[in-house]
Image 1 (tube, helix red, strand yellow):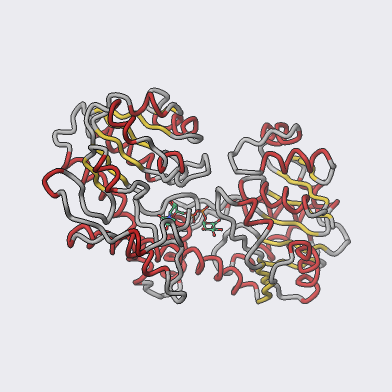
Image 2: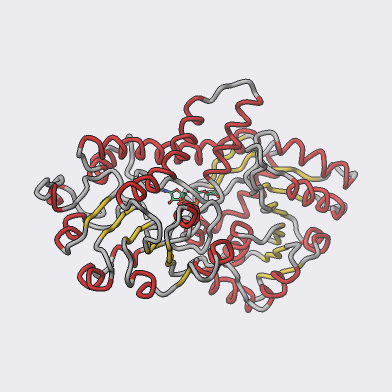
Length: 455
Ligand code: UGA
């Protein structure tokens, strides 16, 4: 089938490449001419495992094309996806400017043939009604159906998520539109869940808000763990064995960041407010996340006082591993806060240091791990990249000035760090330092290492 995707960011580009991979003929659109010129030559500017190869091979097979011309893409396609950005507004609401613009332009190019327009961007409930009106006005046509088709891709594993979706949600008012989308998604072989448009829009927010709730919940448990001397990583594993709870999204840490959870939780809260509902639970989730961002900072300032001129090595800048995305990255905020407090910070990220240096400066960010840790007064792990899990602690001990680790993502084994001679401060775990030596953690022999933990 022929499909157009309006918006070639993470969601649009990954979806376009995967749709082409299963045999559809896809044309991806973006207003950024430089980006489209680069993509036409196979140049993918974002880091997403597997995406580069997929774009190149599907360009070569001519199933994937790129353009800045919305009209051409719409005229050539029977199915049009809207995948433009919906960033946060300063008041926490969702900025729909790009969605409205895309809808207007799609409408202007609709001809006489029936088309299905599917909204993949995360938009507030009832936005579909507004888009439908905009397209009707700009096209003067009623020969289209507007469908909600939320995506559930995780950055870092977006290609795999798109190729093997756990479910495909189609929120359609018309059976004809739903049938066309079902046909389109058939090659993926996943369960298709058809519902009405508002339910599909709401389902996307419900999923992200629930996952954010799990994270804030475990972070609250982590805080109590530190007070009572329990270990939150063992608690997550124990909780995760109960299928009613499930093992995922129970990793305590610095809180959730990125381009989705912070924005979508704020947006759902605003939607609830507008509808006259005080969403107490979601407000707490957001508040806990905001507090959690500060907790590690306070711990570092307390343990290392005075912080002035302390040489700190922050490991990780991306909002999570396997991406170069630093949008709402707590790691980047942490580096900024530490610099503001007078520390001398060097920060490492395997992939995101170039992006982060645009905010923090090239003198702070580096992709050379050895250079960053050498001579530091403390090492702070802020993103759980696999390379940090495998740190050679004996080597690290030799090159740092002071053997202190703040493990903001609980990637290290506290006992190993302690045995290697470090003072170890985890998140929701007991401190490991000489004066409290001997306090043991829940035996790893009871729990299979790494079992049930999400990346
Ligand atoms: C999230 C959802 O997981 C996707 O299903 C959804 O499609 C996407 O948003 C979206 O709305 O487009 P993403 O933002 O890529 O995906 O990243 P996640 O893996 O969900 O992580 C979000 C944040 O939560 C990260 O900062 C991560 O470090 C944090 N997190 C995650 C934790 O602190 N603990 C956990 O146990 C899991």
